[in-house]
Image 1 (cartoon, rainbow, N blue to C red):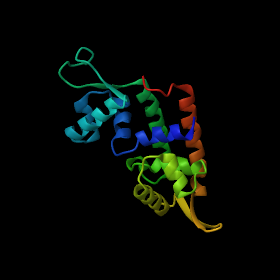
Image 2 (cartoon, rainbow, N blue to C red):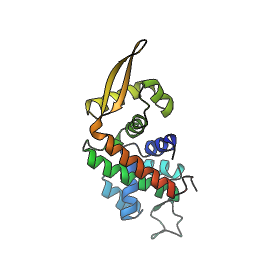
Image 3 (cartoon, rainbow, N blue to C red):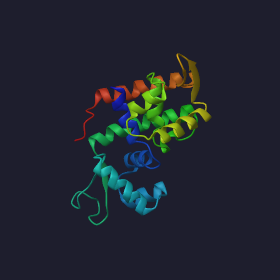
Image 4 (cartoon, one colour):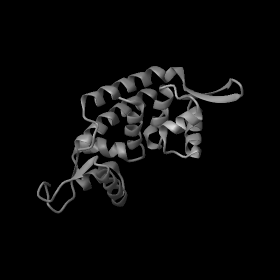
Length: 194
């Protein structure tokens, strides 16, 4: 698996509700109301998230003929969604091991950590690799990760002073395990949307 693909997957799992929705869809089924109650999310917010997941081809809305009750919305994971679910499980266990809370809740945390793990250590190289975040968002996330002591900011004296970032050595082995597991998941499954 390439770094850009992994970043795409981990970015797609970013945000407050995507991972919890996928994990609960898998464990409890895809009926809307039980899912909404289990997640303790407002119906409108769940509906918005489900609409986004359907348009991203992560989940599929079942037809009235396929549902347990024809009038109640129900969803299931697509093959692409199942791949994301496995990555979500890896991230969830990694977050428990790292013990810094749910890092996935904020956009770009996991993509930044993966970029740093792959030696993208300068602000501009990280920004170019990630492609979509604004410099302000990237700067904010890097600052937060430094405050959590997951990332170290250093100054290198080259022809001019340059800031570099790297994963704190304490967490480097955890990142290696995460990368290995994500690579194995994607090596065994098609990573295209069906």
